[in-house]
Length: 135
Image (cartoon, rainbow, N blue to C red; front, side, top):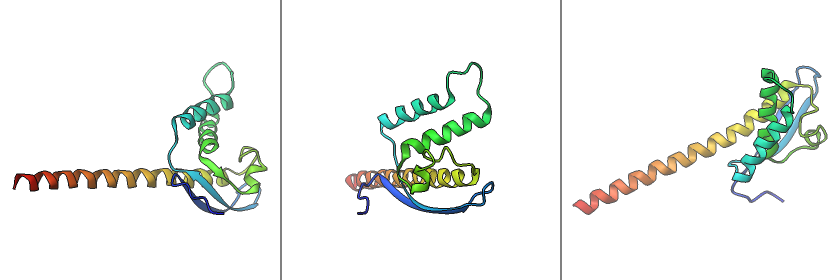
């Protein structure tokens, strides 16, 4: 049954890992926008991934924590190979994770652009209405 949630969008990836040479193909369904709860969960997940270590985390660790916390709250449905690898965290190929992350963030960016266009049109409509009232 297809997902009818207007806040969800699906995409497919087909990428071969640079470390393993394994081809990963699958459909992902992700959230376009995050609720306040999602935003808090994302931050909590990021903090838990970095752990209680003292000092500044290494840049790669910080980047990975940001990526996996974002994917952790945005992905609604994923292929079994993603789920079987602890939501991608047990994968060895940067290229695979990067493909999923890039496509996921493209969904958000597209949704924000659409919202911006709607806002611009609303402003134009208000201006046009104001001009017609003057006439």
